[in-house]
Length: 231
Image (cartoon, rainbow, N blue to C red; front, side):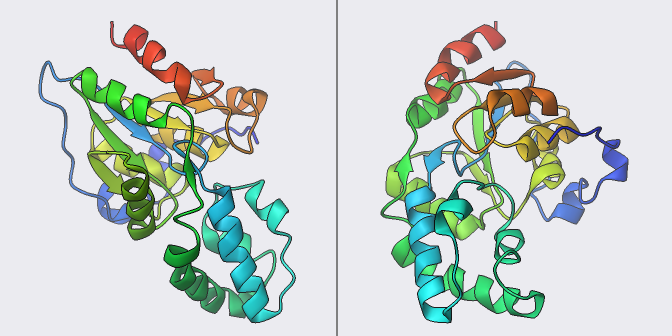
């Protein structure tokens, strides 16, 4: 989904105050890199869990939802996906119910993607800080990370695409890693190096066309790449 990006001042929200993200925390001189990661299909394979939650929602509402299609295009906010299946006036209630059932249905089936723990450890080994910046709400993101034993220094939720740039910039991120073209756009807004991982619905070509500075096949390649990047 390549497109020319507007300047950061033309995008909303890119100001940390507008986006509801923490105040700027620049890295001290000599500190390691601040690296942001997307969550779904970057650090974790949440397709089994999200699919389970959608099946509950479909059963309760009687609305036929193609769950395989839903989990093939993870990335955009929940409400954007629900709008494909529910009339606009029913989306808020469907989203609320989905979030109610999510902790009991979606956390346990979801798995860490290969190399996820090692990628976070690599940032720490270089004296850096890791951020998870995701469209998923913060509570559910933390549940996933805790369940899988993945340790990040900060979790910021409910941000998508360009809006992620405000959180990344506020924290002084120099790198953002994600599987979706929206993640590349967020990195661009933040002025961060955009690392694409071809583990989600967007292929390597799409990520490159969107402006990714480098595309890895998965996070297993990230520690070696970070070692080169920080030289």
